Length: 473
Ligand SMILES: Cc1cc2nc3c(=O)[nH]c(=O)nc-3n(C[C@H](O)[C@H](O)[C@H](O)COP(=O)(O)OP(=O)(O)OC[C@H]3O[C@@H](n4cnc5c(N)ncnc54)[C@H](O)[C@@H]3O)c2cc1C
Image 1 (cartoon, rainbow, N blue to C red):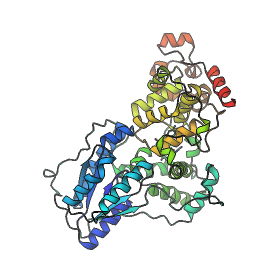
Image 2 (tube, helix red, strand yellow):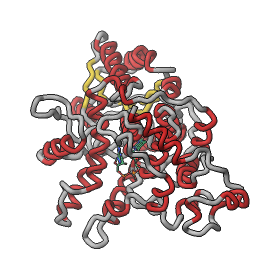
Image 3 (cartoon, rainbow, N blue to C red):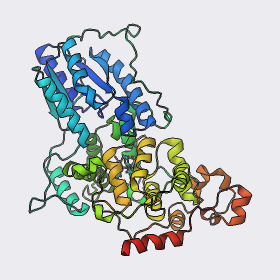
Image 4 (cartoon, rainbow, N blue to C red):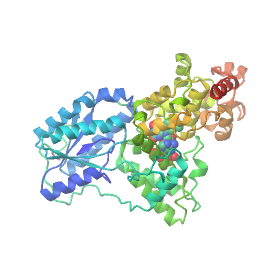
């Protein structure tokens, strides 16, 4: 069984079926993970996410070993070399079949077809499973076209989902009779700790590498949602100073928790509390995740760096100094800087702030959204190609059902609205902590000098006009 962004034992379709067949046929199961450093680099995959994956794999190694299953790392520079490496592994270990869960981005699909074809020409069959989506059947308009607007898509998607009997698959079970895979030993001194060849620093205090922890975080989030028997996520989710969101994205991105586990948790809570699942805001956010996957599956260009609406791309400005100020959190706009520092320090950024920083880069600085997409991929612990690409295209107005060009966030008024007392800014920019609740959103020139805080890199009103003018033209 080939593990990828599905780093868990519970509700893992490929692992579950491989294990079942192994038990029925009394044949050992081996699990592989492919370390492809050049490919990760090409994808700008963050060190934080790779570090989390490495630690999750280590935890899985000991859990799998207790089930008599070996976990091996296959090393290949990039996807191009994978088919022959996996074939050679299969021949060495006399593997008869490969089990894997499908993935959405185009070059991952291409990688899988090449591996599957190479194995097939050596009489090794592959079994692929749906795993990453809640709805796997095609969703089309009445005229059989793809949807281009989120809301009608969501209605259709939700109706299909609610008519589906979503069930979780059990983790492989020790009680079942299963032969040990050769070279898999229970004794830790004989077992080499696996490594995927990266240093991968990340904030393990914020993101403990454990499937069990991910499940507990989901349970806590759902329980904390209902202090008065009413879900309050929709009221709390926009304020970066509070923990108003689930903080599950890193676990969802690497598959330490399945999307079905998330859905069933909210579905059951809604049923118990007699709340409408149709109106539930958290499920709608899971819907956005799935919408971006739907778009990517229906439009190969999105995997290749193209905009959904290329005609909406302005002539982007090339300004390395402004880009670098944005990346380092030195724009002189406190909420933007605090947001970028949150990303640089914790490898995560609140959704409201992702929208603000993205709008700032694409609409006010007129810097290509691909620069922002790349920087986020390289720094987010929850880096997820379809969601990140979708979020950036939404923010830059080039996407499907995107935020229109004329919707340009004013960072200062957004700051006053969503961090009214400046708690978040004070946490990230302690040099501004002595300012009162009004000035903290926009310090005066004297305050900036006295507190050693940078001057604004742009004039908001001028840049807003420039963006609007471009749009009208
Ligand atoms: C420019 C930009 C880039 C983004 N890049 C990523 C990314 O690389 N990876 C990523 O997982 N999310 C991305 N998002 C979406 C969103 O910001 C994060 O999913 C969310 O902040 C994660 O925090 P949470 O787990 O507490 O979310 P919650 O609010 O608790 O939401 C639950 C889950 O729903 C999904 N989700 C929520 N909002 C969105 C959304 N707008 N689009 C897609 N999925 C969503 C995530 O899986 C999230 O974990 C991006 C958004 C923008 C605007």
